[in-house]
Length: 265
Image (cartoon, rainbow, N blue to C red):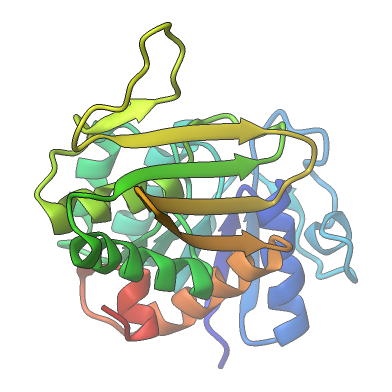
């Protein structure tokens, strides 16, 4: 029997790709597609909304009983309802929503004592390899190398900097003894904007339909090292989320990461 899946934010850019790829892979039984009750597509077949065949599941705002796992790529305002549902129903949770408050992050950690949870700012395989690498590279290069993070996304992205850029910075800080987020300098706009020792520059680009580009620059006098990840489509994130959901279903309650799913550290 296929595991029962609920997709939250089902009419969003990510939600539609998750449903499409879930239908294509045929490894899950999609039992609900959740969206804001005011969304214009409420009541339409979720498969059609996702650009696929009908699946006889209407886009709705009500969570049904009996889910094995929930994937949520909606908005921060909707995250609490999803977390509460998963706790009450014993469903595993894969949460990819960025821009969460500190209170919501704590709520996720508390929930992980009762249900298996994966919260990740980015679920692509390649990006999670980059997450693993940046701290190691920063530590190997040492204090003489300045660090700048540049992230690029589409014009519709609401939060800045991206959650992935913050994860990169957090991993670098952890590996090099810097304080996070105190070490971050967000852009530069001053007559005297000389780099401060130990700081990490953070820059956000919002343009067109850029899916996601993250670059970490390590520069010193005489050379520069750049680590870069470019997402060519949202499918890389959607496939990662479905892979995480499949992995998570039979796990014990805990707070897991994509590194756990991929077996990297």
